[in-house]
Length: 513
Ligand code: DGJ
Image (cartoon, rainbow, N blue to C red):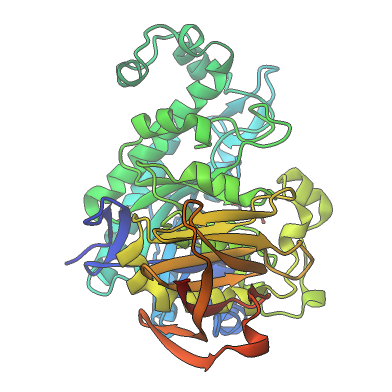
């Protein structure tokens, strides 16, 4: 058995390995309800994602359907999903919609939903109960843990050889909305205690939650409570089948106070707490619907946390962020949300009602799909072919990748050993990607440049009296790590290296005189 695993490669970069080889997830997450009906999947989803050059679908598995009768598990629908994925040559990341989904408990089985005494809910300070099972409800957690463990046992029994399933998301965007913490009796009691010793060890502080975390005590307390629980569920499943497991975050965003976004989720500022509380989780992943996607990716990729983007906006700019995710952040995967819609007629797409987007704090333009399929598909295709080069060059000064970070970002300046490059971004416009690119230095004078919506010019080093010119410019494609040229560009076509809306690759050889 070779179970997928996240470990450091020989350069120390955290990498997902499937069958002992680095595996990059060129993914897409399907809509919440799609996987509940295999016929719907066959009709509406699998044909729709064909041709997008994806290798992985992120699909939910629903506790309410797997344990409709208490204690009786039926995983046949999961088996069906796996068979479909195999028939369509895809891998899966399964999303465990268990106790918590979008800061609610909407996917708990009906028998649990109805028994609010035994499976008690989060209480606001006002005493109002909200539809979220409390992370202090041990009985509910035990039920979730048991079903997740049984699911992992089932996955192992049918998938340990083929590794169709490469990773598990445990719960979905946990936390509580409407207040900063749970005020049920058990929570109140725990809140007055000393912080756990593991947390004292990493913070170097001792005392109650209030004493140590002051104004941020409520959120820190909830982060520990959710982190501990999700971590325990993950670890318990991994004892049976050690697939990589992660938790995703509804981002901390305007209006910025805990409870306006889910308090206790794995947002950046809570990651030390989550990491300490949940050693069984391999990573924390951002769901990115805000306009400043690149800043979020920058923050989520750290020495200890590889970047995986399970959900992100699906307008045309997503392709540019994708290039940056793999080229600059060494992402293990990338996955726009609602992927089955990408190939539809943009006018035929049902957008979530404005009030739903507002409630979920989603930038409405994130769901525009004009141009997305064509550009993302080409980006995935290029990245796949680039893999051998990316693996060889990442972590070195010979690889540079960039994306336009915001409205006031006009370009960037890239330094290589013998030359510098000036990158000027084109202005942003609807249905187009952003200025973005990947530059690979193959030798002192030779480069491969892939990009969109930018112009690149080549400069001598400041202390170099010689001028820099293009010796040879070729358009072409990278195929399995090797550049295959098409036209050699000279004359009118060599005035500048300019990238348009569809990603392209050039090989350029420079010289100085
Ligand atoms: C984030 C959630 O994680 C998804 O399941 C979905 O609800 C999207 N928001 C919005 O459609």
